[in-house]
Image (cartoon, rainbow, N blue to C red):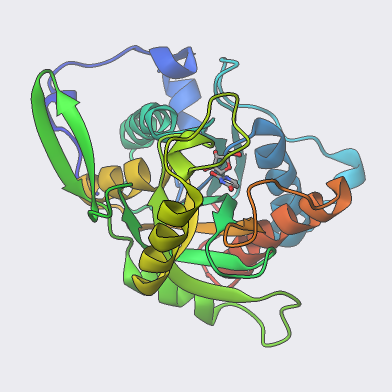
Length: 292
Ligand code: R2B
Ligand code: URA
């Protein structure tokens, strides 16, 4: 892991985005972390923490509620062994803020060897809904494999590829009898859910017609792009700068070749979202450093 060297010159006492005093007692809670698993919602992060407590620590989860270790309504952070289950909200800008905050916190707590995995949902491109995609490379909407940001008025492009060894380790950790399809492929980090992904059911009308969209989908499918979502660009770019191995595990809720709307039942959507969690749990259980 590589961190901004200026952080060591100006000691920080308060981590604003987590509303957290950086006291020795608080920092102690974040020592010996190896894995950070990020999901959009705080509810899903708490659920993952519960599942990990059951699988990793053999806790009877009827009597266990994970404790949120930070004091903001924007993000939640739970810990089980050497894993942090964290929520990141929606979109590249939100996950980027979370990535800075959690990485600073883990650095101040003395951690140096980390892996970051986003676990989430996505819109599939030419694959069955319910398929889990592990991201090899996150593309910008213009199909460039980097994330563009601005430092003041200066454009900065940062590569967004995942750590391919991590992708392979995650795939290798899955049992042969997994009851759903799993593939590795590339992802597009769109700027929003509706127009950025050319949905025709947004409150505002998309300007590209059906023909343009169909050709675009064919083109991206040929680039091994298998899903649309909204955070993989910032995740890939941040982790490449920080030299933290990272990737994304995202189940697809819809096949965009076939439509815009997510039509699965509420139960089916819960089961789909459990699939991405199951894949990360299988990976974590294959590791030997889960106990803190
Ligand atoms: C996938 O799903 C969310 C939108 O529903 C967004 O956070 C994403 O990347
Ligand atoms: N998340 C997205 O960003 N797009 C989808 O189609 C589904 C989930």
